[in-house]
Amino acid sequence: MAESDTKALGRVKTYTSGLITSPWQGPVAEIPAADIERMEFQLALRRRGISDQAVLRAMDAVPREHFVAPEYLDCAYADQALPIACGQTISQPYVVAYMAERLEVEPHHRVLEVGTGSGYQAAILSRLAREVLSIERYRTLADAARRRLETLGYANVAIVLGDGLAGAPRDAPFDRIIVTAAASDVPTVLVDQLGASGKMLLPVGPANGAQHIVKFSRATDGTVARENLIAVRFVPLSRGRAREL
Ligand code: SAH
Image (cartoon, rainbow, N blue to C red; front, side):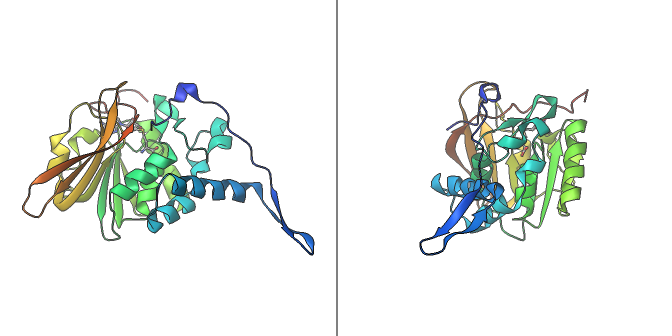
């Protein structure tokens, strides 16, 4: 399983509306194309093994079409990563749902995200957690995501411009940490910002090579366990705030 290579993107099927037909009355209702597309989206997530009801509800509630670039509107519900500004990507829906599920977010949790990008993963997490702090190194992306989330009414997400590799020491510890760009080495600074019973998910691996989602779980005695999960493909985690854009 790989997050889609944005260069290999093709157009996806277009949905047409469907008729609900009764055997004795004939066609009785028409289902709009957009609803069929959203039903397909949910089914695809379930087929791939997402079963957490809160995660599925969040994936249903957040309108991904607001997070993709206008030229990719017709692919908003396709299960693929898509290009956004600054050479970055909005993650593939399955990977967003998978990470949200494996993060085991509870309603009282404070979550740190590194790599706001479009703000889509942050929006999903905001429906599962008490509050989300998301850090982005590109000003253009941080500003756009902030505006987008404000417009959509996600009031429990704060977007901060900065270097997520430093985490957010003043707001630490966090119940959950999620990194949505690939680290070549595990940033121990972030592991240190996990609270008691904290969990962290991040893709680890070289920029253009084999990456895996790695899960860190802090036990009550302070020890940290590491588990390797699925293979993925993410844009690299870069050091420092972006100097341009
Ligand atoms: N979660 C995003 C996916 C973003 S892609 C979404 O749902 O759309 C990864 C993002 O991580 C990019 O926007 C990239 O600029 C950002 N990033 C990379 N290194 C970073 C760092 N050190 N600090 C903060 N953001 C970083």
